[in-house]
Amino acid sequence: MKVTLAELKKGEKAIIIDVSSNDIPLKLLEMGCLPGNFVELLQVAPFSDPMYLNINDSHVAIRKETAEHIIIKITNG
Image (cartoon, rainbow, N blue to C red; front, side, top):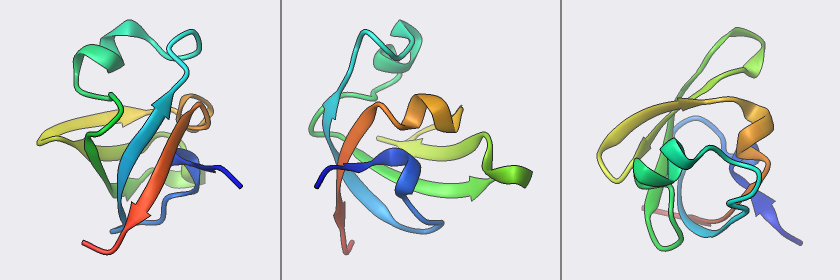
């Protein structure tokens, strides 16, 4: 079963496994949303959209719809 970035809970950390580059903006890839990089969910806006993330020390806000196209592996630290 694949886990997506949209399923990450506040405070959880993960490693990006795969990114569907056809479904996410190029700007997000340029900001470090690439396989092998670490991601942490910092905050979630009201109604769960957008998500505020730390991706390799870059703070990024993305829509939950976009996060569903990013496959992750949750880590403990």
